[in-house]
Length: 202
Image (cartoon, rainbow, N blue to C red):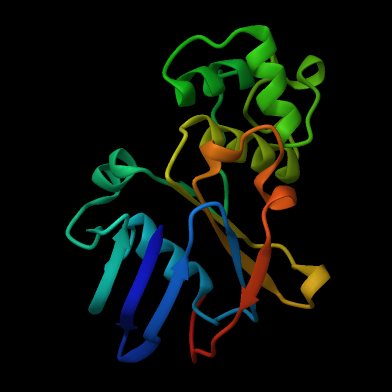
């Protein structure tokens, strides 16, 4: 379970997050939606350790993540997908998935994880992870790498319009994705949305 308690954060003299409280139970997908500048990505960065709160706690199964850097949080079980996925020249989809898994995956395992994110292995597994993939394709592959890490909680951010909820952008956190493998987390979990105002960046 991920618990955010009384988290506040300011930048350049402006309050970005103000006393945020949120609980993400095990096996749930929680989406934060709202306009640009609402603080969604800032909160996601707080969970991943890219930013640290001015006040409050971020607890994963009772352990306070705030003192930990991003690498330590990843080892503790936090997976994070960036708004803009990184592109690598000279590396294939197979290579990057094997690196995420920490071992050489079988063809069947590669096919299964790519199927979870809506891609056919035959069309993608030996393609380069560079400028030959669309933004949507590279994002799906990045999500596959997060799933392969079997994180306790996975955080995803999206720069595109979340049109189904009428929001400009969305950030989602999925708790215990590894316990529910076999279906994409965004289709298999009960969901709820929350939004909160903020005067500045997302």
